[in-house]
Amino acid sequence: MPTQVEKMIVAASRLLPKDTAVYVGTGMPLLASALALNTHAPDLLLVYEGGGVGGKPAGRLPIQVSESLTYDDGVIVGSMDYVMSLAQAGWIQYGFLGGAQIDKYGNLNTTVIGDWDKPKIRLPGSGGGADIASFCDRNIILMQQDKRKFVEELDFLTSPGYLTGKGAREEAGLPRNSGPYRVITQLGVYGFDEETKEMTLLQLFEGVTLEDVQEHSSFPIRISDDWTYVAAPEEDELATLRGLDPDGVVLG
Amino acid sequence: MGNKLNENDARLYGWEHPDDIREFRLKNKSMLKKDKRTTLPEAVKRGVKEGAYVAFGGMGSVRSSVAAVHEVIRQKIGDLTVAAKGNQYDWQLLASAGNVTKAEVAYGFADEIRGLSRPLRAAAESGRLKVLSETTNAGFQWRLTAASKGLSFYPTKSALGTDTSGYSGAKTITDPFTGEPIELLPACFPDVAFIHVHRADKYGNCQIDGNIATDFELAHAAKFVLITAEEIVDHEIIQQAPELTKIPYFVVDAVVEVPYGCHPNQLPRAYSFDEDHWREWLDASLTDEGVEKYFEEYVYGTEDHFEYLEKIGGLKVINELEKIEHRQTPYPKVARRQG
Image (cartoon, rainbow over all chains, first blue to last red; front, top):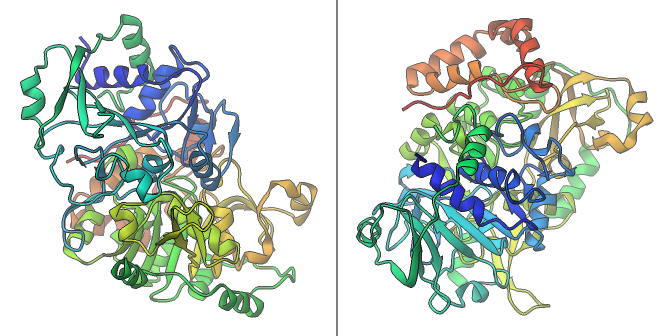
């Protein structure tokens, strides 16, 4: 039986086309990208903030975005200036993000819980998160879903989703046609409504109900009229996935 | 809008007029090929002043200036401001030791999959460590890019419309070409840059294998550039392949040979992370007493990096880390923070 985390990673992996580049961080994003690389997308170009481009990690997963394994079997290794410029210039269509809090427009908080001046919990900060959220056309957000994480109002808006709704990104000056694409939680897969840019349920994982979705969110979640269930992971997907993380660094 | 600009002025750190920096360089940097080799205690004493704004080379916990950090801790140089621009182990160690009181933060309180840093979170949440401003990894890169190009700012489309931008020193104006908003990141001229490299000659020309993160711009932006090198090589090695030089000598102020100078972290293509030592630090960092004991044992209790290397297991451990990085030995279990 696949775990929740495995189901989330497989769902994320399937969203990556075979002819694109993806900005990856360590953890679940890396595993989803590596899975795509080893299944349907052998030319998927993995790009890391440390400067590595096109690496194909084997044997284990990188634990740092700037370690040498990120450019092993790669095509070019440069600087942060190079890879961030690639993203700003539109070469890297897909990105992965996570967060401690998300709102209905896909804005993310990875900075503080509580007041910025006197934080209850100090989180890592943007890192490359706000860059990826700003630059990439189709961002995939991976996170656990509960009422404390799916909030009406963020304590701090670290990385831009659709800000205050349709047209707000363009008005703020962010690149045209960029923004969050999907949110994947342990309950399901969400997109963003074309008209309002509000988070909308597209797919449920087997065994999850529409009530579960609402009960695990502080804001009401829109439900797509033609929502479906996520297709369960194939045996070979799971085998490949587990083989990529033999020590259970991400899968546990 | 007016208020926001004023607020962001108040968050302007590390910025200076580029012409003032030109004058500074005229007085303090030189094209003369001088022998800049020295000892780490001497280099730190000369270059790192109480209250300085410091930045580190490498990224995350890769190619970190660990030996230099240990020496700053030994010399008890305090009240430092750190450019937390995506670096992890180096500045977290320095801040855990109490030498850092302020930071500008792009990424600062975690070590990727190893987890959040307990001592740093406690420092920030109690107010002992003041976060001056927020920015992004690209933001810090391009603040240094501006400085290295002799410009007062660098434009970007990152983080527009966010609190990250609102709590930074950046300003948003109208791009005169597109007519749309554009963010201007203020140049950042750190007082000190610590950079660990694979090879340097005695004048300070440096070769770095693998990724260079922000080091090219950082070395050209900082006022005092302290290089630790795994190995000091003959100048001829540099001359034979100048295309491999990632930092030229004229920006460098001090060069110190420190073999295995970034242990317990990875030096790409040379040696791997020391997961056993990482586990020891992560476990120690769960309590203030543990942190104190760690520093007593490994930093205050050692005279220099050679003594430190003996304490962490000496040649036997080092040799194993080299084999792991060269894929001759399987990677060990990854150390993660407990609790």
